[in-house]
Amino acid sequence: MTGYGITLSSPWARALLGLIALAVAVFLIVPVLVIVPLSFSSGSFLSFPPPGFSLRWYQQLFSRSDWMQSAWLSIWIAALVALLATVLGTAASFGLVRARFPGQRLLLAFILSPLIIPGIIVAIAVYFFYARLQLVGSPVAIAVAHTALAVPFVVVNVSASLHGFDKRLEMAAQNLGAGAFDTFRLVILPGIRPGVIAGALFAFITSFDELIVALFIAGPSQVTLPLRMWESMRSSLEPTLAAVSTLAIVASVSLFLCASWLQGRARATGGRIAEEDT
Amino acid sequence: MTARFRYGLLVLPLLAFLLAAYLVPVALMLSNTAGASFDFEPLRQVIASPVAMKVFLFTIRTAIWVTVITLVLAYPLAFFIATARPLTASLLMAVVLIPFWTSILIRSYAWMVLLGRKGVINEFLIWAGLLDQPLKLLNTSFAVYIGMVHVLLPFMILPILASLKGIDGRLVAAAENLGAGPASVFRHIILPLSMPGLLAGTVLVFVLGLGFYITPALLGGPSDMTISMLIAQEVDLYRWDAGAAMAALLLVMTLAALLLFGRFVSLDKILGGAK
Image 1 (cartoon, rainbow over the protein chains, first blue to last red):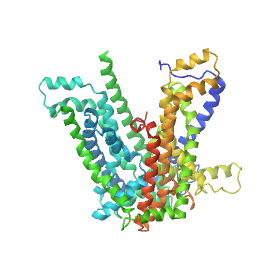
Image 2 (cartoon, rainbow over the protein chains, first blue to last red; image 1 turned 90 degrees about the vertical axis):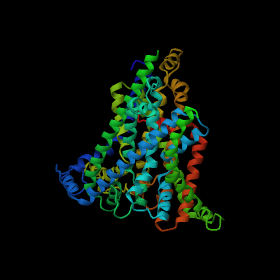
Image 3 (tube, helix red, strand yellow; image 1 turned 180 degrees about the horizontal axis):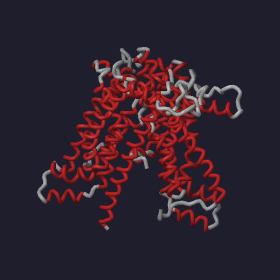
Image 4 (tube, each protein chain N blue to C red; image 1 turned 135 degrees about the vertical axis):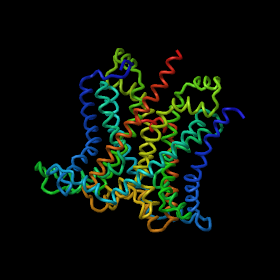
């Protein structure tokens, strides 16, 4: 860091602040980390420290068809959501970044609103609606509802990439005779690809982790992974849960790491072009 | 047709999709609150119901307290990250982001494992000889607060940190050269300049706190019922009109909080990235 960031000159203030920060950091990370050793426990209860090391809960997880079916269902729905949200969200980002029209801010607020509206409101609204149309219990219906929740992440990421994209590249392509579609495919898309992929990953995870909407609109034969975990938490708290949770944490954290690495790259590319301006 | 206008057309597919999959269902649900004869009977019944009002008050009170606790815990950590060396700062960022990236369901499960009667904390305290009998920690309001604060902390830390990182350190140096002590520097320079992030985090955490469902349902006791839980219960009992009326009130509360204080929040900045 070479900038003029703030520093703390008093050593006492620094020590006190460090202690508080450490306590808050421990509070944040311990619950996430505590599950991992439990999932490798050889005991049949969640006792800590675990009596011994074993992979039995992972073995049980992979041999149980109900958990595996739920995992595949969630992956399948999340993939569909990522596809839908990325296509709709990328197109809309172009409109929001490149065009100026009345009501634009309101439209953006509307598109981003699922991030902040309580999940239960969306869940029961969609439930009533699907019940009228007799769509409750269809995996595609779950994916459609999840897409509304996931689209904001695509719009935010792709818009950020588009802001950083050098428009002169586009003009150059058009001057050289490329049509609108070729310009998009050969020039713009490669430039904003990190943002698009980051958006798609966020969309995937949003759907993969979503519980409340699924709670209402999934039928008895469409038990998504979060739904099965929820049911298990409300009844038995079996240690299999620790194994699923560990795998889910590893999966989420790696996908998010990819996404934020891509976000950083998207910004770095934008920055490099901006630097060449000066 | 100008090029600028043509670009605008690209919003239409998403707009059409959101109208059909999101806006129309919510609007139809809200219309349920009017009742069969447009006298807003379901809405009036909810407002007149002491049980429902108790749940509303509990939810608002919980959201306020969670916001206060979150703010008190988040500010020192954000401040420490902003002033730490790069390696320490990245390490602490990972500590903030890994829970942020883990689903609410799994984090609530983690707290069940920690706080349960035979949970990690009780087992440890008994093993250490500090307790004879396990404490009742799970299924209490205390557990709800812990779980909600844990989920919402990153939403407070990230905007505050963004504000603090934007402060020009030369202002602090100038104030110190002019004789200001640490307390004075904090009060007159750092606190006012970090106010935008602080307000953004406060609004965000309060509004998100109003809608909590999973965490209180898993960690709370019978009396820890939030609006979202009550709505779910009404819908499960096929009292759709009552559920819709409560959802309408919750939505109005959320939107009112955002309209009053929303100018402090830019969602795209907070959620666009995790940095």
